[in-house]
Amino acid sequence: MVLVALAERGRVATRSSQTKDADVLVDVCASPKVLSQVVHELGSYGFTPIEPFAGSDFARCTFVGIGGSGQIDVLCPEDASYTDLRSAPGVESLAIPGGRRALEVSKLVTISYDLDEPDVTIRVPLLAGAIVVKAAAAVHPATSNQPRHSQDIVDMLLGLDDPSSERSEMSEEDRSLLQSLSDRMANDGDVAWEGVTARQRNQARAAFDLLVR
Image (tube, rainbow, N blue to C red; front, side):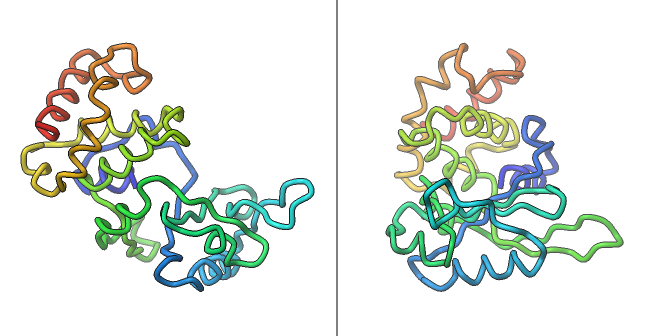
């Protein structure tokens, strides 16, 4: 999501550009069969699920490519029920903070890898929506201790050319969610600023302030 959102603006996410992992978010609340369909589709492309935990009949809904070439996590929005998360045989998905908002703000984009490969069309949150989705993960107790969420927010803030324009795409609830990160954004020692210069920190803070004012 972060890579695509920034690439759409001609920017590079330096701290996450080396990842080989991807997330797929499926709306099992709207279509209970979609999790099984996605699991089947991944299998047809050569992805295999990880092994179940000891003593469990279900594995986490994570799939590994041939030769460990990449990893895909199949996730669900936070309003999915436990039954929804186990609606595909042998795997159990995770309900992620911000998942419902991610589905609401996603837009179709076309990705071109090179001239020898076909283009791929996917639905993904773009910059304003992606910042909100990452903010949800950064403040939720289950995921707030994972540095990549706040770091991704900073990288995306640095990709904003016109924060005031992006603000118009956010709801009051979105801006309130971002506001809850104000203390962290004001703290020079927060993990969000690792690898960021003082000038970049000031730029990101200015963009943040324009979004939440």
